[in-house]
Structure formats: C-alpha cells, structure tokens
Image (tube, rainbow, N blue to C red; front, side, top):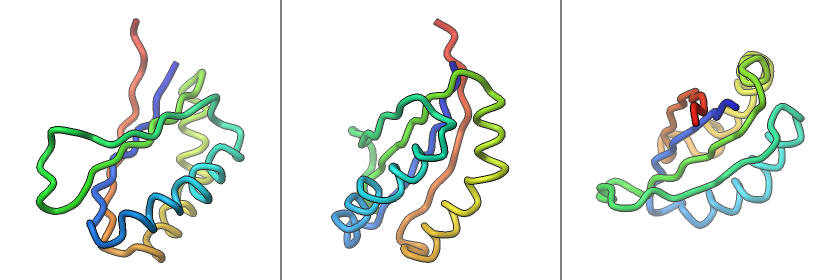
Amino acid sequence: MFILNTTTLVDPGIVASWLAWMKDRQIPGIMATGFFERYQFVRLVDVDESHGLTFALQLYATDRAACDHFQSTHEPAFQRESQRLWGEKSMSFGTLMEVVH
C-alpha cells in the first residue's frame, strides 16, 4: 500500500472557504480519477499556527504505479486549480510513503 500525502499550510483568512472547496470539489475530483482506494483528510495539531492552519490529504493506493500515473497525468491540473483559486494563501508539498506494517 502506498500513501500520497499532501500537506498544506492555509492562511487563516481563507480556511473556511478552502475547507469547503477541498471537501466539495478537490477531494471528490481526485477520487474520481480512480487511482486511489480511500483517503484521509486531517488537520495537524500541536504545530505552529502563527502563519495558518496545516492540513494533510492522504491518498491510499494499492501500488506505486497508481501514484506515479496520477502524479504525471492528473496532479498538475489539480495544482493549477489550487494556485488559481488560492495563490500564496495556500502552500503545499507532497510526499510518497509506503506502508511497511
């Protein structure tokens, strides 16, 4: 099992709108690509919140090929949409993890 994790720092002024967009549009759009079996959407706690709130979207795939294919064919469009809507008020970075039990 592989987890494609995206961690995002969100400006306090847009948190409510950003959360609604993530839940109503971004996550459903990503899941509709069919590359992931399930997801978790979480907020990080016990972190410095002086610049905003931090969230993580964890997408679960059965194999690395699904993650690689998503990243090369679909992720750029999702990133462009985020940049268009939120600009510098939302900053993200991604990591790929493998579950090792």
